[in-house]
Image (cartoon, rainbow, N blue to C red):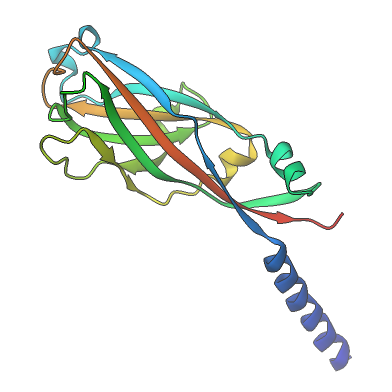
Length: 184
């Protein structure tokens, strides 16, 4: 009986090591999401109130990723978003001096997006900044990745009016997760 317990423990440990060896990480840069803020939409009453600037629908085709790696079934773990950057594209001479704070959230639907999982946020915004690398909260979103699609929402608070009648910005982020193939 003792040998049976030792053998079971050895096999379980060995299986976990094999699983770890066959697991691999996936890094998917999301398509650049460009959006426009119109000063007519941001009146003085919206200053200091958090406002949705934009949302992006993210689709993750897990089956396609698995097929590309020759895997028919797997578990997805360690899902999160890295490298969140917001940049002013136009007008080129404008900066983020009007922005008090911003945060990126992830959720399953637009109606409850503001209460979604916070992914990243601004820290101190340096005067004259035209690009912001948000501080990552290392939030787990494996459940959203397993759903194959979800939304990212960029919320912000204004310190004052927008510096132009329209600002064109971009949102860039990278989705990462681990795939652990299951026995076929």
